[in-house]
Image (cartoon, rainbow, N blue to C red; front, side, top):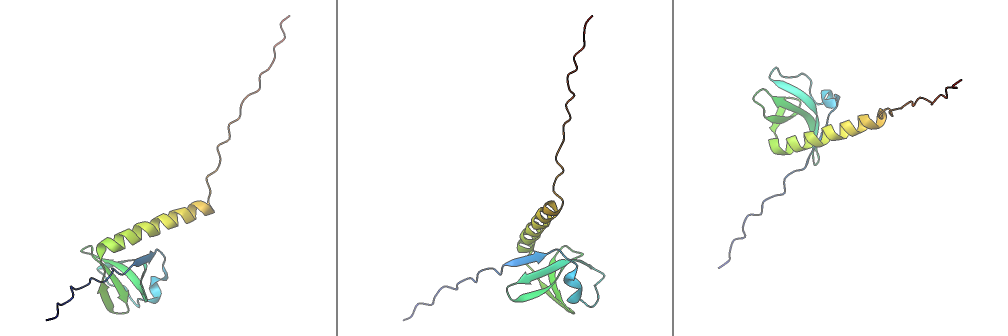
Length: 110
């Protein structure tokens, strides 16, 4: 008698998000109930990232919508926002604060 192997769960597909307007090449027209956020990559799949009016995330390729895991997308969005913030800080570094101290002046007493 053979013992069946327990089902092995597949590792979750890693989701990467790019907050750009390049999503336009994946979507000929935007849906009225969707907010386009950027580009999403899942392994070999790439498409536009959209948030539907009810709050769920989908990958859009033409007229095809594929639902995405909200937790993974939220993590990827946070990482993309942090990367964008670091990139902007590198382009526009903080201006150093300059403190001007007044010189002492000697007063002659007569």
